Length: 342
Image 1 (cartoon, rainbow, N blue to C red):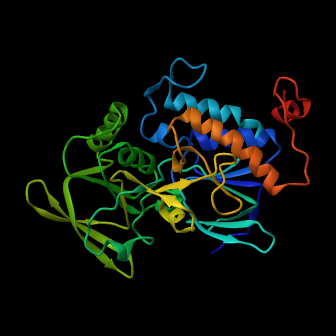
Image 2 (image 1 turned 60 degrees about the horizontal axis):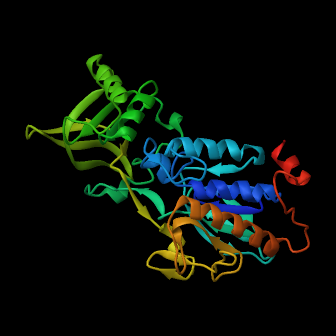
């Protein structure tokens, strides 16, 4: 079911550091933003791939971790009340008669704005899908690659697949709700935080969660609804596990996804832009950060921050030519300071 259309000034596809800084630059100009990201939290690669890894080339920050940078960016944009749409991709894009764009997400949320900004880094993080027989029959009905609403799993029998942080985190998170949880992993070892692993093993020891070492070989059910899964154990046995929902957490891959179908001028999965405005070849659509390309492009967070600033000023003039733009320095411009709440 398509939801009621939300209206804003700018839709940003990607909530990594560059997308977040675009919210700040847009906010200084009085523009409201909605952000769409396939992950369940802001930060993009910084939080998904290297939250604890030190970064040394952020101006005035001799050393900052990926997560610290994202936390500070979130604090910086807090005055501007950005709206986040997590766990979903930007999907369909339609040009309206009023010259605005209408964006529909993979969760059927509909957003309208005159400005679209692609800040998707190398692309959206999308789940790696296991090669199980008949998997497509059960997708969207009883196979979930992310948790959107926890109460969906109340009193259900769950099979969670994987051995990383996501798999173990959701075992811990859903255990109080589910009727039964079985974790299936191909080996005994895990790739999760030590504390998370310890909590999981305690649940197993207490008999609250089952753990099976093996590989899923068969999915059973009707009309897309699972009833059980067949597992070949590490000992060579074949067992059946009752299952209402299966949640495979097999890692993530990066893909442009539906963005590649929007008709933008692409160069090896990157979007070509005009460096004076960071506009694409389609009016009202801009691209910043690692996803955009141009001669002498340098892929740095610093570069993306610059691109965000230039883009916001150009996009404001494009979308609101009759509106006065607040320019100047944050140290002296009272209109900007008022927006910042200082």
